[in-house]
Image (cartoon, rainbow, N blue to C red; front, top):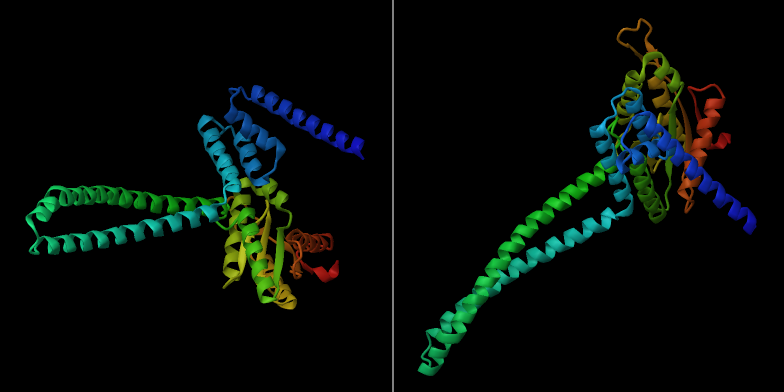
Length: 345
C-alpha cells in the first residue's frame, strides 16, 4: 500500500513538471516575458481547473489579443478567485457589521455622558460653595474636563471617519463576493454561487424536513454551434439560454451556469413529478424556438437535454449532483432533446 501511494505522489510530481515544461515552452513560443503573471496565466490554461476561465485565456491567445494589459486583468481575476476561496467573506461581513454597531453605540453613549457631565458641573459651580472648592474646580477639574471633552470630540471625529470607511469596505466586500459568484458571460450565478446556494437550501431542507429538486441541463451539440457559427454566436447562445431560464423560473427557484454549456436549476419545496414537468417545459420552450443568425440563411435550432434528481435527507450534495448528472447523460445517450429523471438510472 505504501509503495502504491509513493508511486502516485511521484506521478503527480512528474505531471506537475510536465505542465511546467509545457508552460515555459508556450511562453517562449509566444515571445512572452518570463514573469510570474504570464507564467501563472498560461499555467492555469494548461491545468484547466476552471474550464471557462481557461477557455478565455485560450481564446485570447488564439486571436492574438493577449498582451500585458490582458494578462494583468486575467491575473487579477485569478488572484481574486483564490482570495475569495480562502477568506470567509460571510464572517468578515459579520465582523464589520458588529464593529459598526459598536462604534455607533459608543458615539451615542459618549455624547450623552458628555452632556450630563457638563450640565452637572454647571449646576455644582452655581452652588454656594467655599472659595477653596470653587478655585479647585476652576483650576483643576474644569480644565481637565475640557481636555477630556476635546479628546473625546477628536476621537469621535476619527470614529465617524472610520465608520464611513468601514461602511464602504463592507459594500465593496459584498460587491466582490457577488462578482465572484456571478458568471461573467451570462450574468447569472456561476458554479461557486451554485455551490453556496445549494448548501444553504439543503440546510433549510433538513430543518424543515422537506426536499428540493435539482435539474441539470446541457446544451446539445454546442461544439457544432461554435464550429458552424463561431464563438461569438456560441456565447450569444449561452446568454440566450440563461435569459430563458430566468424567465421560466420564479420565486425561490435558482439558476446557475455550472460549466461550459451546463446549467443548473434548483427548485426548493418541489415534488419530483413537478420538477420533471418544469424541466420538460423548459426543454420544449428551447426546442421550439428558431433563432435567426446574421449572415446565415439557415436558422439556429437549439435543444437541451436534462437530468432531474431529488435531495435525500442528509445526503452529501456531490451525490445529488452526480445523480442529476447521470440522469442527464441518460437523456443524451437516448437521443438528446429529452429529460430523464433519476428513476431511469
